[in-house]
Image (cartoon, rainbow, N blue to C red):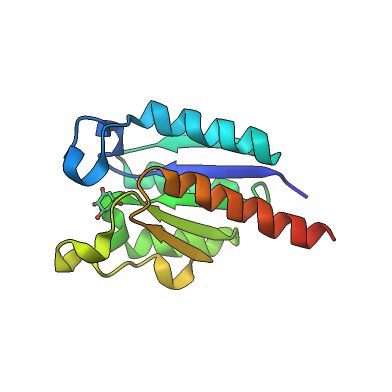
Length: 149
Ligand code: DQA
């Protein structure tokens, strides 16, 4: 069974650390990448961590996960609220999806309350800050253990 968890980040998340710190905190995307690597190592998961501002590139990465990755942990950024194409790609990948948002989107503007991804995700993390990525990976490993028994 694959032990590779693909951690994907959508638009503007390359700006973490300087972008709206009141919503997203002071950690950079490099910090989040290091957190995911450390967490993956402790859990026995191989982590591939990526970010793009280009929707087509994100869709290609999702397609390439099919049959190769055990989980997709994705913070789709604003595409969460706009993109049927990202949702369709995730469904087509047939890889279990874990949706992560650094901020609690339900506490924010109304347009952030709807997600095209949540309806096809195994689980959703919102408002745990960057720790939400680690929590999602812990759950991936937990489910993995259950499947091995
Ligand atoms: C976000 C929330 C989205 O509404 C926003 O567009 C983002 C980041 C989060 O991590 O809290 O870019 O996904």
